[in-house]
Length: 273
Length: 314
Image (tube, rainbow over all chains, first blue to last red):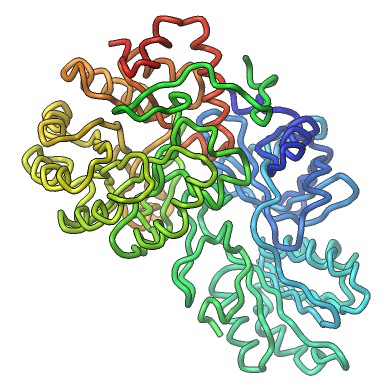
């Protein structure tokens, strides 16, 4: 069996869902691949199932076509438009390098959507705090929140250098603030905008995704101000769907799987508050 | 039947069953311990359709496992060092096992311990459970006590299995490590002490190093290698044990990603096989492989007949 010989998306999804199961691994068609920054790409593929079911902070397993590279690359969903799903990723190894060379018309194997999403409510001001490649899942979060007219969304993004996600999140957020490493970090930015964070009648909630030290600092910042905080974690995964018990995180209720019990946890659950 | 035409969800009447130590399996393909969690896998396929489900190792008390990172990719495979994180046998008995039996699965309960006392305590608790078979894990390379350290020495293993044997009437499978000088002497010790069957192999000790830091990728430093990369090695172990022990039931494990590879194990003398790593990159792989094998056995009536009677090709 060659890894690229999986059943095309429509039939695979139809067979699984008709039997009452979650669709398994399948081949999907690439519709676009854009370079956003040095080593950062936005890959788009057509998959009506993921497009219809994806929720904020969920991710998709992408698979290399190289039979020597079998393990999935879990990538956060950054946007859904019609039947098309976009993922933003950085080239960090040979697998992601392969994805950077995919072109419209090529196929790639996927599994998803995976993971438990952010828990969203009405009447809230959501402050989306992202760092680096933690920003893309928050673009999708903003897109999902745009369907809730009772909510207000502010994006607070930190970048190494290029502000690659500002325009994308700007399509959906009410306000976009960003900072680069040379200027400071997202906590500096939060301090700068703190006075304008409270919106009358809305509960402020922070949703964050980025490097662990950044998220710990954000959780601590939120806790000192009594602001609720949900964090989408990253950990080296095996299967991505909860069966191999590789990607665990310590919580106050013991070790949990980042892929299936998360990736979203509250600061309280993690004991970071 | 090629994968393009395989629909693992359509109802299927299994044509070729097997028996392992007297326990009927509806087909010769099970899931390998450590790669199956009911809460995850049940959303992808009907797990009761597997020949058997070998569950994650259970210990007397909950185990936290190793620190992260716990995995690294390797060519045509992966290295893992989970360290048998599990919620303990009491949780297993009230949660996972009843659910699996309710679904109609044949269950092989994998037993883990840090000491002989640990293994005995778990086996005692499982003795009156609805588990169909017990699989004694004396081969995990990622725990500091028990696991592979028990299964690497014939005398130590003989002592443990002799102690467990009178505790239960359930068929007892001993899962063997490939990380030994002479697997046949280990296999013989297990059988002499009362093992009803053997499963082999567990993972091979291996590691990956991050060349940017010069440090091991996995926090435990070393881990166990699995995946298609280990297929010919694992098959060779099954062959050698079968040559030395013509009568003991054997479950072949290691690198199976297709019905054809499962068939190679049956021709090497296995009664059944288990699929592990393939499920991690294709959740329905175990059931697909079982279906592929069921069709491959149609044109091999002599082999199929032997398996159905609990016999083996060699």
